[in-house]
Image: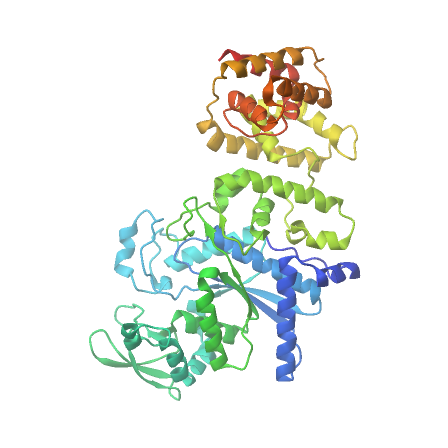
Length: 553
């Protein structure tokens, strides 16, 4: 799923609206545009024609939902930029740090001991523990590219190993040699005394073991393109920095990539702000170019409030989200409040999905360009839930599923077409005898998500409670009053009865407690949609039977 690349040119009123939009992708795009024009003025050069965005991926583990968020958000800014600057081409570089040494064994593989002999080697030199690719890095890079392709991102893949070995990074490595002393001094100022003694921007690869060495460098020769380093065995050895015989430490490497790949914009997690600032200083030592515009987003947390990690595999996966909600709702979650730390676990899905459905409806109704560009839906391309009926909500479907307890798809289809569809059809603004095919598809998808969520999270913990004596009296009165209504009573009639009984039975000033009680004794949960709507959709006769069963428990 890429941020949508709107056809160019958009109507002028959209460009004008985008220029003043408060939506964060447009704010970031304007920041990038100003950076490029300022650099153009400072260097007295023509405005560059290809603007490059970059995202980084560490293939020590499979791509996770945080990877998705970074690529998606960067693509949203790229798309916003293309609207503001339609004459400039752009490119998204997805960079894999596959020359990094394997620091620890991931917890997510079934045969961890197979990797122990390869600790310290570049990820691209570690055998694939899954046995399907030439290296562990290639396995994870392949998964990354499939992941990006499946979601429709437009990108250029770049491997660190290929860049170092092919000569693509030679210009940056040469420049790092020329700037070696000032870069070393800058880095050492941020290190402790012990680390200073062995630190060097260059990390040679041991020719015998293949391990990435963190050893002192005694001399550098920019003319020859070599370094002289103290090996772990105490010997002095000379090696070229080219041809994949060396790699750079993390922060110098980041700056070198910006320099060689001519990167203009990159996002990164809040935990990398100090690293980004240091890399920006290194780039200034290497070049007169302005460092890329950047955006530090907050991190995703698991249910325990801990940072999501590829190697640990904690938190919610993309596959899990897509079991219980749509891809566009996931993109919506990523769009919302990127500078706020968010807990990414199963219980956030229902609320997110309903919030998305609300914004989806508002977007479809909006007539002004300004209102559309400020809506999150404008920045989401893959409209899975493309037509959202006015009455559709995930919470409503969840409660319907909980009440009916449906298990077979035949019954699900029957309930949708005999109870769901007529009510939604009546409430659609457009009216008509039938819901559109698109609306029916949306309802079917929501229904399937609700069934899956109910199966895995609601039903296992669902424990309806017995009503207290006073609550039983109130339920019996509600049953009696509902029985006086015709089976096809209007929603407003049912609602009037439900509210009236609640007020008469002592809940007048605490109606929320009235509805909590009803859902606790019926469904084993304290929240739900409007109770009258629930009875209308479920069927008044069946709803009365549920109440009678609860009153007898």
